[in-house]
Image (cartoon, rainbow, N blue to C red):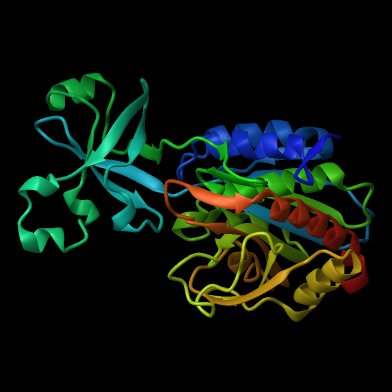
Length: 355
């Protein structure tokens, strides 16, 4: 296995392909197909459920605990809601996107006839009134320009109401072990999950690795996957807010890039089960893996729904600190990715000691 910056080159390649794939919420097909091919050699069974979750199973001992690890395949994006007479496309947001980052972004409109490149536009600043310049331009006043002369031409190009739109960003290495890309929330979790299954030897517990759908609009895929699996333990692999940048107070987002994976103590949807949190912390300490603790973040992860499945599932979260998530581009440290894999492997191996 070849390593660069302390991380497997194969893992970087998987992250790059997953990041470049387009899988706006509800249209996760391309990501699911990639993950199916990556996971298949390392599991005993793999299937897709009725709504599109990818569920892979690695068999352990008969009476051993069942662990569900989950990473969501979907990314935030846009959806076409109207085609204007002059061929401009109005859209609605899918998932939590700040209106301030939308203007002038290059995007891809995914139609039945194939992808179309476009740009998000608005009334030019040169002709805005002074009071208009002081306000954030709301998404309702923005539009996508695909170069169509009118509505009829846009329709001939393949555009329909309901087509999804992704940001047109490509993965790149920008520093010493630092990369940027689209949809690290949560393609980095997907990459960690794949590498974790790859590195797991014969393990005592039974492991379900789930690529979930529609996390960004209500944790929907994890809800139905956990109901099917009935796990004894749940661990979500996700991205979290890295606050190590100008303008962010230390108490607002304490997680930092390069200082290891982030373990959730509590967020808007979950108070991590004490036994799961202890499992993760002990596994990190035993293997000398640096980690960070996080609480008070407004968002939630798939673990929030896994925890509430059936009679309840003790659950926790391992996150990767990334800058600028829920935007067209995010930044992360590959060393954190490698350490998250090591922690996930160690924690799964240790599950029978705690449950």
